[in-house]
Image 1 (spheres, rainbow, N blue to C red):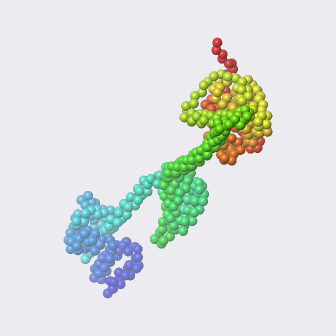
Image 2 (image 1 turned 180 degrees about the vertical axis):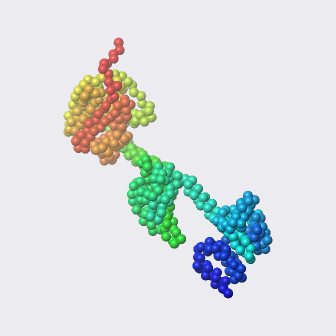
Image 3 (image 1 turned 90 degrees about the horizontal axis):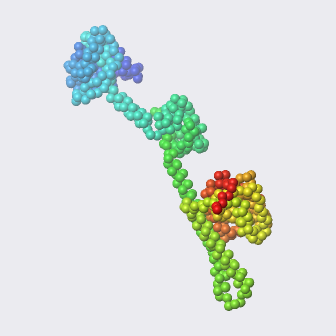
Length: 526
């Protein structure tokens, strides 16, 4: 007589992972020998699937797995019961049809899914296969019943995870262990412009070309291939070339053998945050620049006001406390110093008021027609003394007689400032004022003085900016208001102030008026 325990062990070793499939074949061939039934019972009881044998629909055998699956206490709850009792009503007809096919035609039917009713009334999903067997000399049907609960739970978990990835508001990329793209979610397609069909099968190295910061990719690859998680930020180009920022997390996925089998990349759009940071950084720099400009302005204004005030107070005090020791010529000299200081302060205050009006859009032009050549000659008379003092040759060239519609006082203010600056920075050199070059309504003030670099031009055009830094160490006087005011006055006329300069060679400043301001005849009133 064969040892049932040894038979079971040998059968399990031989069948291995195909134990359940081959169990059906073994049970179908059971004879009437007692040892065959012992072996069958032993094998059936260790089967993870339910085994039920029924004759004419009445259960004659049930293993431990089906007892537990249906929530029964022992096989006595099942033996003698009809098999149909445990099926939901909608499956009864189909089950009866299948059982009849097995009994009458000897069919072996594959697994089909059905719903069973447990003892407590709960519905569970199972799959059932059936085959004919001989049970104690009678034709019977053996059904193997497999619980699908765990599979359904896993399927539902998988579907939930799939929906989560599909609907994730962040871009998701999944690659194999070699970095070949296997999946991208819809948000990635929307953000990048690349579709799944375009990305599938491409190496993750594809992104090396799109990532702006080129050193990022090599660091990312090194970290994840070592089995670590890489986190970082980088800007990337979309399919259309649009730049946007991503906060990335790239993680390796490990198999049961603890080998990397996939990589998952999560990309969160942080473009808006980066733009906000850039604006804040710009605002901070602007604030710092404004603070520095304020400090420079206060230092410069202190110098500009204090110098003439010292002269006014000093010479006035000397004259007021005089006991007649000063000659008439000395008194006149001291009085002229006081007058110069007062006029300088008045000009400074006027410049400040003009700048305030311009920046507040309160300055209005007083329009009239006038001849540019006459205005230029008037300005030359005013700066002639300064030119002689600086040993500067001053000349005027009228290329074309130009009649202009504009604010005579403001145009004169601009030219006076430009001519004064040219003479001031061209000691021992020459200054040429050219009117109507090429028949255009413009004035050029050309000097052969110290000149400026491009950065110095930008500084000189900013309020209180001076190409010569240092309020107390500078060689040339001035508050740094003249050029910014001149440029704004030209803007108000619809024209522009163009500065071309070369360091050490000189400067050419053009007052360019729009052609619409040129008049071809002076209108006179009678």
